[in-house]
Image 1 (cartoon, rainbow, N blue to C red):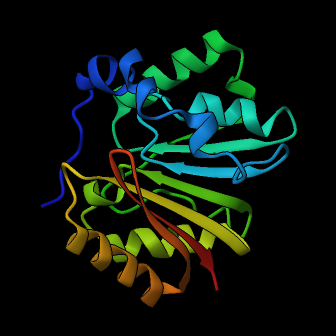
Image 2: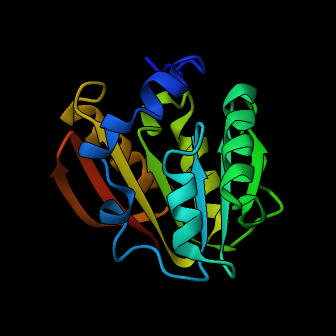
Length: 185
């Protein structure tokens, strides 16, 4: 059953410095993100990954950061402003109907769905919206945690993404979760 991480957990869990022991954004996304890229990050929360991604894409790149919770968005905005990275972000508030990305057709090089897909009620619509935002041959990196998502559920999500129009490039087990790298076919 989909659920959303409550905003009050953001500072306690999502931004906890101990998280860096297991999830190091620079290492996780090494080889995926290049300077000048446009990266979509659905479910950005308060920006644990968003700010490092903004540094990686550099001043010519852009991160489209989307979350459904206003408190997460305000936390991200505050942190990005403090870090001097706000000008590299396109921050959007999603709704139950979608991420509101219809103005971004075929513009993103990469989408990063980290600990997000299991929180989405309508995964088919989610994958379709991501597919529409990606350029031809754009990539989608999905990472789901062991403690929330079984192998079977991960396989079902990836199978659905393939039905929508993605092709699998790689799947693997990482520390703390399962990942898949998909490409818009």
